[in-house]
Amino acid sequence: MTWDITGMAAIANIGATPEEIFDALCAGQESRTPLKAFDPAKYRAAYAYEIDDRPEAGVDLPGRATRWLTTVVRQAAAEAGLGEDLAQVPVLVGTTMREQRSLELWWRDGAQVAVDDLHFGTALKAEFGACTTYTFANACSASLYALGMATDMIDLGLADTVIVAGTDAATESGFGTLDRVQNDLPDALRPFDATHKGMLMGEGAAAVVVQRTGTGPVHARVRGVSMNCDGHHATAPDPDGITRAVRDAYARAGVRAGDIDLVMLHGSGTPLNDKTESSVLRHVFQGAGAGPRMTAIKAMTGHTMGGSGLLSLVMAVLAMKSGTVPPVLGLADPIPEAAGLGLVQGRPTTADLRLAQVHAFGFGGINAVAIVEAIR
Image 1 (spheres, one colour):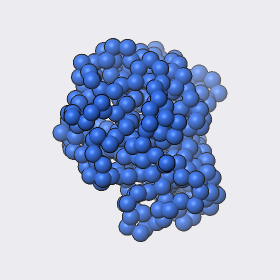
Image 2 (tube, one colour; image 1 turned 180 degrees about the vertical axis):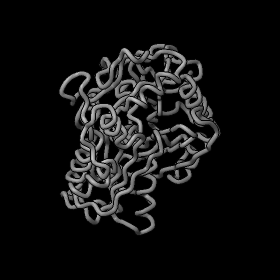
Image 3 (spheres, one colour; image 1 turned 90 degrees about the horizontal axis):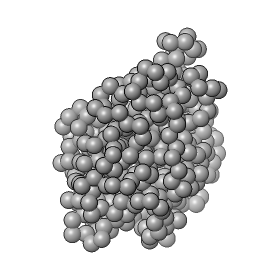
Image 4 (tube, helix red, strand yellow; image 1 turned 45 degrees about the vertical axis):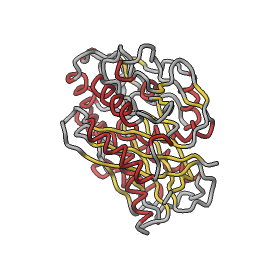
């Protein structure tokens, strides 16, 4: 069974629509900026990939993750012809932090934050009359987990249409934790390059409308979504767990490794993740001919946490539509484990792209892989 994607929307530091983000990725211009949300003097890392919607540096606002969420849900629903009455449409939201930043601002500055507003369902009910909403806090894999649940709901006859979204705003507690646990000091997120030192936070949201049979334009089709939790380590990825997720995605989608034309890598920029992901893909695509093109968008968006998997999926859809794969920004000297992989460097490349594989791997071994098919 396949599922139609009939509406898409996204917001990131480099654009307010999927097309703006994709064009920026293809342009390959540096997008990190000096840290604005918190006092940079407290941290080793001085940069982030923030959305520039605050009144001024050092002045933050509560509820930003919720505002981005309602914006992308509205845009995706409109594109799919659903309107703004979502009373009968389940909305599944993937996130890492929910509205934790709002709580930080309440604690630090006394910001007015209602307890009910910490749950995304409150705003979705108020804005769209949404009666069925679920939030998945599955770390960096959350929005692809939500996508997998959406396909299950449709397959089981629980719904004909589901909206899947992901959203996260940078939090000081999260930024500070990364700043202390990473051995080296990253001044930019550089996936798969020999200079990579670690992860930097990004901000953003994405949404897609998934339907059994779409009534509007169909952007692409979901062929299958795999999810697992290997529980191998709190932070270190497990190659066996990731390999199982990839192979299960192929089984669900009814495809083989040699059928894949594009891989949207998790590409978090941490040495351990990059080495593990590269090694898994070298094994999976061994004997699969020239292998697929590969790219990693976090080099320009930062790590957008819970929404990162869905943002990569939306970019995969646009890549397949245009036959263009954006480069990995800053990739000049790939790590040895990535030798032989089809990483796109320097400038965009063109190709006939029919099937895309999208990765999202989270702390604790929470892995998700989606297979998406172009519309021909």
